[in-house]
Every structure is written in C-alpha cells, then in structure tokens.
Length: 424
Image (cartoon, rainbow, N blue to C red; front, side, top):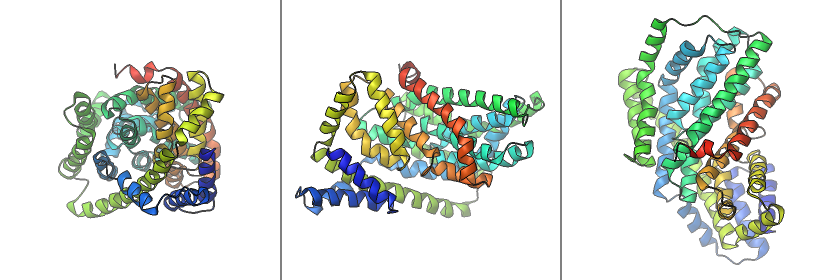
C-alpha cells in the first residue's frame, strides 16, 4: 500500500538524522521518482506555496509572539503566586499549583513550550526546596504544559480547524472541559504523590488578605483568557483577530500595568517569534506538498479500505487512531503529524459517524501527549533543562504520569459529552 511506503520512506530519512523539513520534501520527490508518477516538480513548488497561503494561518505567528510576550512579561509569575495562595495548603500542594498554573497560563498562550518554560522557571526552585525529586519535577512540568493544547487559543486547534473546516470557536469550547478533567486527574496524582512520599504534605493556608492581594495582582492576567475565550465564543472576533487581541493585550499588561517588559525587549522577542514562526511555516508548506501527493494518489481511499477491513465499529476505529497517532508522535512534532494524517483520517471518521469536533479534540490530545515522550518530546527536553536533570531519569519518572494522561485520553475518546457538552 502506498501509504505504508510513504511513511516507511519518511521514517527512514528522518531517523537518518535529516531535518524534518528536508525529510518531508525528500519523501515527496522520492515517491514521485520511484513510482514514476510523472508529476512535474513545479507542482510540488505550487503545493508548497499553497500550503502556507490560507488567511487563517496568520494567527500562528501572532499566537507565537503572544506566547513570547506572556512568558517573559511576568504574567506566569503572578499566576503561580495566585495558584499557590489558593491551593498550596493541599497535600502535594506545589505539584497541584504547577498543574493549575499551567492550565491557567495555557488559556492565554496556546503553546505547550511557552507554558512549560514560563511556569517552570517559577515553580522549579520552590519544588526543589520542598524536597521533590528533580526528575519528577521535570516530568510533571512537561505533562502539565500540554494542557495548553486543549485550551481555546490552542495552535493545533487552529490547524485542525483549517484542515477540517470545523469552527475554531466550537473546537475551543470543546477543549475546555477535557483540559479541566485532565488537570483534575493530574492534581489527584500530585496529592497522592506528595502524601505517599512525604515530600509535600501541604503548607499553611494563605490568609484571606494574602489571597486577595494575589488575586488583585494576577487580575489583569486573568482577564486575558476571559476576553479571548469570550470574544471567540460570542463571535465578536475570529481566531485570527483573537491572536491580534492577545498580542495587544499582552503588550499593554506587560509594558504598562506590570512594567516587567521594556520597549527595548520587544525586538528580541519579535526575533524569537519570527524564528519559531518561520520554522513552523516552512514545515507546514513541506507537509502541504506531501499532502497534495497523498490526495492526488488517493492514499486516503486505500487507507480507508484497510481500516474498514480491520475495524467495523466506531470504537475500534478510534482505538486505531489513538495507537497510530501516539506512535507517529514519537517521531514527528504535532503540527506536521496533524497535517500529514488529518486529511486522510477525516473522511474515514465521517464514515464511522464520528463527530468532527470531538475528533479534533481526540487528535489534538494524542499529539499533545507526543510532546512529552522521547525521542522527540520537545516539552520534556525543556522541562529537563529547567530542572537540571538528564533525560534518562526524567523518562523513568514520566511513566506513571504518562499512564495518567493515557487514562484521560481513553475517557475523552469514549465519553463524547466531555468534548461536546459546552459546544451544545
């Protein structure tokens, strides 16, 4: 089957150490040459350009820039302080604070990497002082950071909306309850871990005065997700416009309210955002070229025939999707993996009568989990660097947390109301 040949060749090239961009292009050109399809190379160039042309993708660099502003603008520090005032007294309190902070910050950044970096810089020293093992700190930080992928400003949601035609507003609403369910289950795990190991039996309750001051200080930061989510939900602005609102609001709060950024910091942040955006858009274009070949050769039809032969029920199809995406995510970052697979899986999902909004949440969570397991796992590498620990020990500490997230994935996959109740 052509799909297996394409993915097999891609994995061989990628595992040889070829950068992802060139691996995608080399796979496209090689398949055309080996199979003798006869497509002119100009077609690849045109499909590459068309892959980055959609207006909706303007939101990607804007959200990336907003994430840079927020992660360097003191907003993360205030969110952590508020979470600690509210939840620090619980067993495993600092772990729960990490989860809650990542959830709240994810509501304004939409980026797992920004979430992990911004919150990690605040919580790692306190957790080390409390007695948490560094490998556990890094593992928890990486896993909690992926909660941002289920929040309304999630960049993977934006890409899935572009690929499927599903409303970004509906996708954003669909991810909120799953994100809170995942955060709650992670918080329960932290409470058990803190109590069972004795490293964190909780601290003294914060006074009402301390809670008030923490809430007041974090207030401008907490208004941001309300504005963005409320604006998208009410139809006041589109996701692209929401990205612009996030940038403007983040600048106003960081420059004029908190004074944690100076105008002289902006060129550096813009350059960082430009580099990240350029890398993302180049990969999106290369994936678009391969996706064009997939469409032209009706690979989706072949894949559908194979899946129909293996799975006859909706639950079997969803199980296959979960297994395949988790394996694929081990080698490819979420956005390229989504661009490669979603166009092929959408018609099959419709054949099995899977709600596409629910399917978007399932696909996004699968690929978000891939951010934390080796060999790619960029969030895991960032967390390990912040906690100053090697990947080997972190991977061992990650296993129970990864099992927890797989439980969350199973719940969200097979209990559709978790994704659809807020949409309805």
